[in-house]
Amino acid sequence: MPRYFDIGSTVLLVVGYGILPEEEDRPIAYELKRAIGSRNDGDENRSGVVVSDMWMVNQEMAELFPAIAVGGPGVNAFAAQIYEGLPVAYTRDERIFVQCGSEGGKRAALWGMDQEATREAVEIFIKDGYLDRFLETVWRRRG
Image (cartoon, rainbow, N blue to C red; front, top):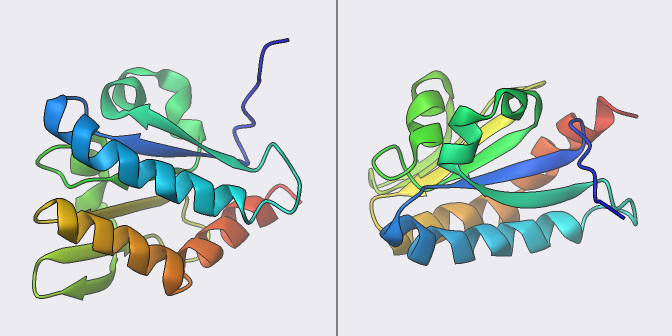
């Protein structure tokens, strides 16, 4: 039986296409996917799916999904598309960036100046409540 992804409750976790982002950012995105799965209250439609930025920017339906870019604008075309329009929720030493829309936003970008800084951005997003607020906004809209 094919699996379907609900555009209102499946969060796309977008990593760059290429050897470095695939190797460095994809494992971080899977950690974020596990964190989302642990918050779904048993609803399998509430999940994260890791995709490449090339799929994201070339798939018309992608804009309907809530999405989080993992990796910065230099390695992630989706992050490059959205980061200028997203408020910075957290930054440290111009190395670590957590960007997410305000109430009602369904986009976020988590990145740093290197792999370790990107990992820290994702950890901060999870531990400091940004993920919970993001999911609450996204999932509340669907009831």
